[in-house]
Image (cartoon, rainbow, N blue to C red; front, side, top):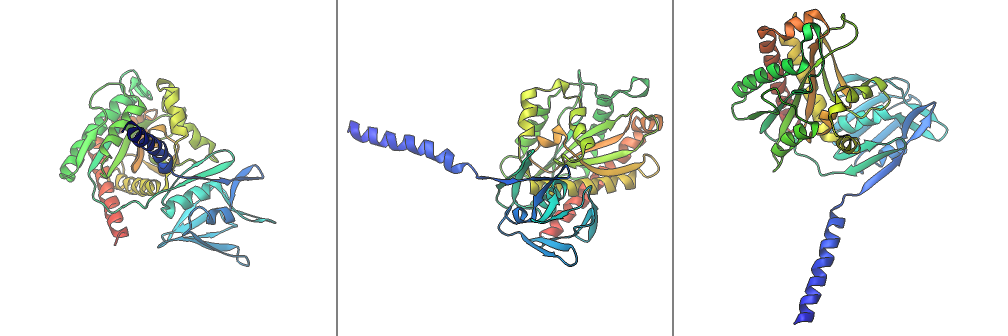
Length: 370
């Protein structure tokens, strides 16, 4: 009998060892190449990212198309732009044709992953693109919750503007106004604030609050509210960001470090930078950013200048496992922007604009599933 128990125990022990290994998803590494001090991925490797990717290139016309399911990207290798869903999107770099084939810039590859909504998670290193294939996410499910993150707080004042105006105070007032608006406009959706008073929260805690709600196949979005600052008092306007790991753009890389990371644990920042990003969530984040920008542009017309929808490697966006955007609501270092940011009229218009953007974002997701 003891031998039987020993045998059963040995089998169970082996199962415990084997199961976690079997559950680990395979990481695929694709080599990046350097051409004229720029980083590229070969078209041959792009085809290998997912078995259902189709790439056709016309050598005579120097153009082609990339397909995945119903989504199509059109490009010309000699132009720093591409077409997706009937819209032209700008790039920083063109593609390259060398003796050994066709190569796409790292920036364009990241755009391809998101625009095609590939069911993969990815991360760029200096020499490789790391891919983990995932299950296709259901992007048509109803919205269960919204997380509103008021940037900074407590000992972390954030940016300082004229008259010692602190970013942490303005972001909190805007977050509260946005919560009231969203609660009224989406009564079936739970709306949460990461902080409801002047207290310090680490980035890890902000992400934990959001991701805890995301468990159990629930669907939510994350909105981080910030204010901008710069050395020039003339710069003004609002911007909306979504996450991208575009190392080609040095200025955008610096934004991740600019958000007062001196208050954060270096171990958590290292964890974030090694984390893979989900391409489908990224596409939804980009879509959310564009709709939020359009909603704000409409409601803030004549109040604060609209600038652009941009991509950056913000730490707070890295940590959230759901569609996420960061709104830079205006410049504290510009007197006109600061005056508007502190007004009741701006708070109401800001909240209404973001709410309108969320509504149109959800409509687009619903149409995509039909």
